[in-house]
Length: 417
Image (cartoon, rainbow, N blue to C red; front, side, top):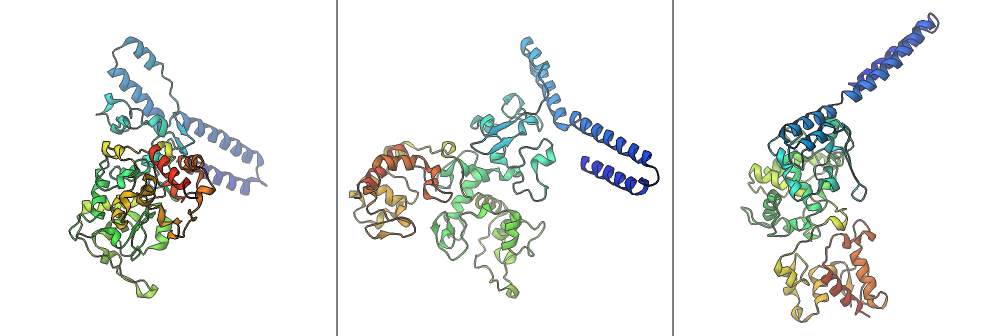
């Protein structure tokens, strides 16, 4: 609304300048002065009638109605109306969501309407530290609902997730949710999709039989490792959307592709595009939505290591040298059981995919055959405990070793003279 008012005032002033400059400058200046006063009035009025002020006033009244303690009542009545903000430079978060959503950490408001409702996830998450957009996305600096949710803002790359897709953000901190059989409360939809990708589907086919996912799988079909990193514009440039029903966007293409691959990607000889080779798995709409949410979560993880959870079961803690989610590869090494813990970890964590030792392993990264002559054990431990010093796609940013594992791996590498 404010933008339309400003545009109207500018048009009136432009027209008055054109027609009154040589005819009646006094009237023209009067119009200019009135325009300035109007702009000032609209600006002040907008500030004191902002919707967030109404939400805060209502929330204070709701608190007063629930409160019985006289001292607390007096404190509530004196509560100032102001913009509230969470700022976390480490996460790159600047959120003003709590300006309106003030009941997110108050269980007394579990049955309240939005934006006053208690957020059950407050039991496990410190919103005052991490904010809201780290999970929900949206435009954290905004103070009006439409702008904050950013669902229809053109060129905004991170609109707020619908409530049934917020699980997209869980793997940012809970990286083990991709691990087969691992359970994370609140991420049940991701777990359903994960088990489907591991072959728990009607056809018994693992997705990595064709796709590569986070470095594991084949190259017959597109690599899905960072599928969710693309913006809507980038997705439009690499996908044909004309066969998508409804709004032609990334979600609908992906969702409908899971439901009927041949319909959404039938091929186009005019541009040399082959039809998809993906079979129709007969997914239900619920499974297709879960899978769409799952692949949207495939993103380069930029989360600082201090915010990444690496909880372990009692059995895992007892055998902390076993770090890899691909431990079944052990059988490929005849003498695996006799190897030192650090070398076992090096193999289980697939470090040899990129690094070679004594001409065994990949050539993507540095040869570690004599790394012990260049770096001490302590220097290696420091490197493993400070993965942020490595590049965005460095392996160290994607592995979460325990202190025992770091010690074992550093000891093994330091022995390579």
